[in-house]
Image 1 (spheres, one colour):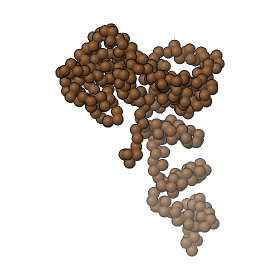
Image 2 (tube, one colour):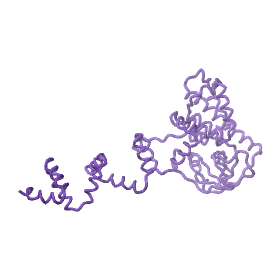
Image 3 (cartoon, rainbow, N blue to C red):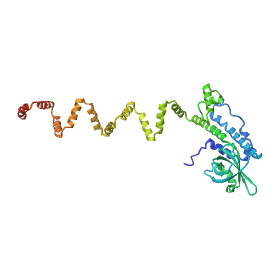
Image 4 (cartoon, one colour):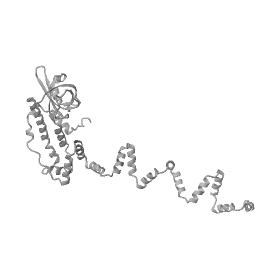
Length: 369
């Protein structure tokens, strides 16, 4: 299973590997054999992937030219070297660059920035022999540098990495080239890519591009990430942007909820309108009213049906049932026995109890007979 899985490098990782694999001779010699023709215009070439791929050799050649300029500055003593010490060396994967922890102070403030800076490390051997290796460095602090280098160069002279006889020179930063390479390798496909490249934009998109160029770096990066999103995600973001202030406030509250609360909200939204209205009215009730409904929901089906039938009766009937419910057990038993009699018998008994006391005494013997 593990053998069947293959890690796919990102565009930035591929770029770094290509640069770090260069020999000094590779840097000094232009890669003209890969630049036999410029990329065709997108209006002629319909395959957007091929359009992006044609820029990759050009980007690598631009990076090589930057490093060649750095080597030329070293030869002309325009760049000063500085002492460097290798603190740690970690090999996580033979197919990926080795991680180096370096310690050294640059001689002066570099104009190349602090990220993706190419350093030329030189080991000064005992017989005045020199050993060179390229590394891509990020300068974290004043004297702390994290770098990457290829294992093949380290294997050529492993003993050198146990010594402190190292110096370094800054060749230049290839951060911009790495970002361009990564963009072309990922080959984003926004809907208006052909219009952008061929200059066939309408007036409003042209204004949009001008507005994009006026953004700061962080804002431009956010726009670039938006362009790389799927159309469905882009549409969701667009819908959010046109929401009213009240709806944005509600959305903000929803996002702040925990997972269970968000699930409850989603369940509520898919209910029918009468059910949503009932829940809304429920929370408008007093605590006593809410408790009655909660207790009702705990009853079994027969009891709930009996209560529903009770409230469906006429008011006079409901009042009679309420009166019976507060009677004594003996009275309830009499009423229960009356319920088993026929209609004529119930009518006679009802008429009998409406008589006066004298009439009841008069009728009692005959009734017993």
